[in-house]
Image (tube, rainbow, N blue to C red; front, side, top):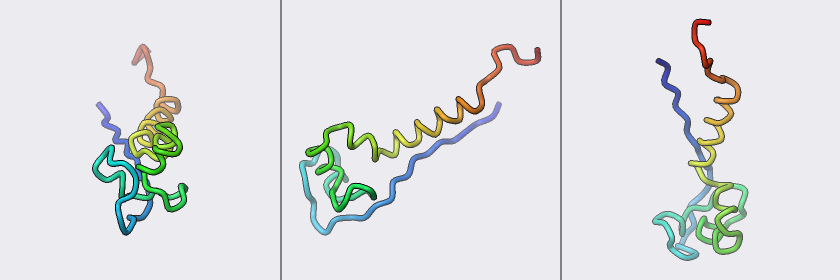
Length: 80
C-alpha cells in the first residue's frame, strides 16, 4: 500500500491590527497573497465564501489530490 500526502500552502503576511469580523481565529490578521492587503475576514465580507475558498489551504490540498487521482487512476482489476 502506498500512502500519498497532500498539503495546501498559502503565502501571505500578518496585518498590524485585526480587521473584519471574527468568523475564525486567525481570519482577522492573515492577509493571503493575491488579495491586496485584505485579511481573510475582509475577503469573506466583500467577496463571500467563494473568495475565501480560492485562498484556502484545504481547497489547494484537495485540488492537488484530485489532480493526482486524474493522473494516477487506480486499476479496477489489479494484476490483469
